[in-house]
Structure formats: C-alpha cells, structure tokens
Image (cartoon, rainbow, N blue to C red; front, side):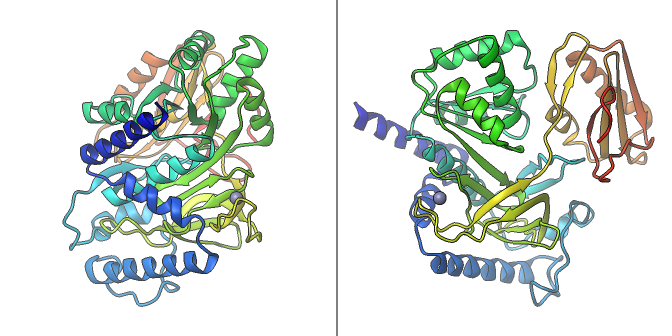
Length: 427
Ligand SMILES: [Zn+2]
C-alpha cells in the first residue's frame, strides 16, 4: 500500500508538470541531490549559472545591453523595474512568460514576468521544506494563506493543479472563531499530513486551540510556516497546539530566494537558485538564476537578513544558513464585529491596478480609512470607489472613507506601513 501511494504521488507530480507546463519533479530531484553537495561545488554551480544568465542579459535585454561587470550594476528597486518594464524582457526567450505579482510586506506590489523553470524551482524549494517536515509525495497538504499563495478567484487550471497536488486551501482572510472551528474540523477529517501557512495565521489558530478548542491531529506529520516573521514563541505556541514539529520556510520569489529549515532548525538558503549578497545594512539583494525570460539582476528584496558564519550543519546540507530574517509582521484588520482580515487582502485587491502606486489602510473601532496614492492621468478619482465597495463587502465598519493622494502616516523608522490600527500608538 505504501509503495502504491508512493507511485500515485509520483504520478500526481508528473500530471502537474504536464498540466502546468512546468518541471517540478525534475527541479525537485535536482535540489534533493544538490543539497548535500560540498560548499565548493555549490559555489561553482551558482557562479556558472550566474555567468550564463548575465551573458543572456547582456546580449538580449535593453536594460543590460551596455554593462560589463556585476559590480558596476545599480541595485535594482521595484520602481526601476516598473519604469523600465519592457527592457528586462529577453528578446531571445521564446517560451511563455507568466505574469506574477510580489506579495511584499511594504507598500505596493510589483508586477513582473516569471518562467516555467523559475516556477518549477519555486515549488521544488517549498517541497524541500515539506519533506523536512515529513512529507511524502502524494500526502494531503493544507495551505493556510492569503493572496500570495492562494488566488481567491482562482481559475479552473489552478484548481486542478491543487487537486493533483492533493492540496486543500484555507483562506486567511476571515479568521473568526466560527471559521477556525470549521478549519480545525476539516484538517482532522481530511487527514491532513502537512500544514503550510502564514506564521500569524498558524499562530492565531494555535492560540485558539490552546485556549478554547483543544483538538488532536492524529494524521498530522509536521507544519511549515512561511511568508512572515517567525518567532520562537510562535513556534512553541504552534507546536503545543498541533503536537508536531514546526519548520520555517522563507522566500522572495521574484529574486529567486528560497530558504528552508532543516531537521536542526537551521534556515538553509538554496544558493543554486539565486545569486545573492547582503549589504552593510543587512539588505538582501538577489538575482533569480532560473528566470531567463525577465531578467532582474541585483534586485533589492526589501528584506533584511543576517547570514550565519556556520558552514557545516549537522544535517549534512551545505546550502548557506540564514541566522535571522528581519522583515515585518503583516498586520491584521479587525472590524466592528471583531472579524479579522489578513492585511494581504489589500495587496490582493490592488495588485493588478498599475495606477495605484502606494496604499495605506488606517482603522479604529468605528472607522476605516483607505489612502491611495494614484496616477490620476490613468483614471479619475471616482474610479477608485469600486475598491471602497469591495472593502464594504468584506469588513464591517460604521464609516468608510477613501482618500486620494493625501499623505500617509509614517512610522518612526520611516518604513512605509500599509496597515495601521490607529487605536494603537504608531511605533
Ligand atoms: Zn541543516
């Protein structure tokens, strides 16, 4: 039976590859072997891949046409990509380009193109983290997340993709007690083996289980947390609630960054998928080595990390280790009915509208104020009321206001905050 399940799992993966036009199985077997290569071999693979990509960039994109060395290149910001968008497309790449948008914890997301190869490595990297948590091909997975991982209005193809992957998706948007109860029952009844989700969502669900709704999950093998800051207190809370080990996974897809925690809870960065550096301030700057269609070199991820000096992990993997990821916790919005919506709801809402340059949502117990910084040469002010209508459908407040091109509230560290609870002091 176990062998049968294994083959069924493999078959599912091949069907996914066929359907989505990608090669997850190939990328996964490559990474599974590669993770135990020596530091020197990994470094060599990374250098060779970069050189190849750089040559393609110089000969086939407008943006990199006149460059000679990596060091002379400017650090690439989202703004630079937006304003030179077409110049990043390789004119010799003749396969399909997939439109993607960044999640991004600060401000407006970036629309960019990805390739089948890059998407394959993205999924393979995620699956490596599941495997540490106990995943075997074909196992039932639950994904608890928002827009970055689940497309709410997902199309038929994506639904089939998840079906074949044996993935059930749980939305992180409406995380009230009633839904949490339903989620917990479904996780138990469908015999979920691995849960993959946002740290804050897992943490909230865990607190509910630990304080109000004690449950046991006999089929669960492990949990992988992603997309946000993950603290040790969150890990303890989640492990107590679900009675399995929790592993962290971190990624910045447009930059090819993918890191996963090993059995010893060291966060290994897959350095054959990205060419990266960390500057003096700790900013992670990286290049996706598998995106040959839309080439972004030296991309500023917006995340700060601290790399470890440690070279030999007990697990035997030689991918470098990240000590700490310093990013931002995605805030939650609480309405008058005490319903909670995940902040990424707004990223999802605005992500395909290029006229919106930046946004901020401020709320207290009664009022929600949506601030948009927009390019008024594209649409007039009235156009943006549609977003307020969408907010009304999802959140209950006494007052809803829309502000176009008014100034944002800023925090002391000058970093843009997109969700602010104004009943709390701004930090
Ligand atoms: Zn390790």
